[in-house]
Length: 284
Ligand code: PMP
Image 1: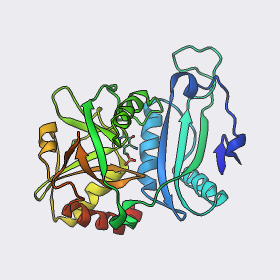
Image 2: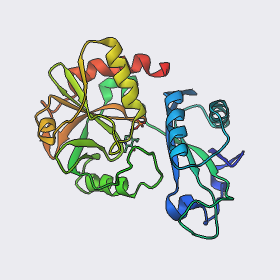
Image 3: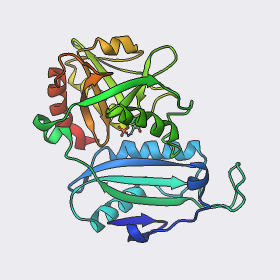
Image 4: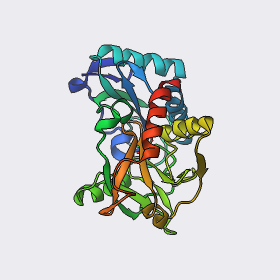
């Protein structure tokens, strides 16, 4: 496939960066993953807004405006075969020989993009959806989970906890027993007519799928939508649990710690909501 690195389109297999890049040495950078189905992106504007927020938080300046990002993303998609792609964007602070922790002054950011194949999403094939099995664990990551940092070791270790137990992801809860998110996605819980998700703070990534879904649900005004604390015990007793992320959209969780969620099948609220998501996902 074709990638983008520091102003040029290059073969991914030929893309090279310095081992002194602070993305490599310190995890000093931010990233985004934007889904694109047959050339159409989902949530481009909010993804770019989150990227800009992350860059501002890290005091990394690229000089790129949204139009420049959009042109480059379109260019990258045009250079690759038509398909279902995750567009990965990473901006790190750049290469610096001093290996001094503080932000170096004369350094130019490394801007890297590539595409990776993503599965047919649930909204395009809800009948064939494979429900997820998850395990729970106390959230042991840092206090800046709202920044989409490339420093993902905390998330990687939590994800591996699920894999080791034969699961698809780990549902994390804080030291009060309240849910934060999954190691690679946000969480929603359904009880009756009420759809809940944890409120945003520094313990949670502000997911774009979460943002779009909340907006669609509020405009539809069919369910009660709540952003607030959800205890792990509440989640165990819920009718439905959903995992949301750009590549998995809204996916039903069928087992939590080996026990069925609801009746252990994709729920009726999920079936309703995935149709809504499919109808409106290109509108953002
Ligand atoms: N939380 C975490 C920790 C994530 O890594 C992700 C992205 N995979 C999400 C939530 C979901 O964010 P988005 O909907 O923007 O993909």
